[in-house]
Length: 87
Image (tube, one colour):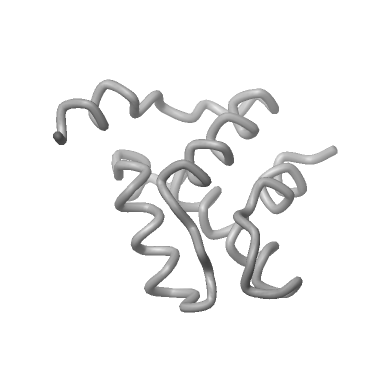
């Protein structure tokens, strides 16, 4: 299974079948992007919901995609320390 497939499968529920792969791809892009890799999970979820209004993405669903990408060998930075500091 490819990283892209795992990210798509880890996309949050809702929004129809077409939205799921789009959401998963967008989350993966935001997690790994050069300019966006430092965003918090909450910030990524907000950007996804702005771009895909039917998405029900949460910080937790973004964390799930990050977990699957790490398991597939992608170098996704750990954001937990920053999430706790945001308060």
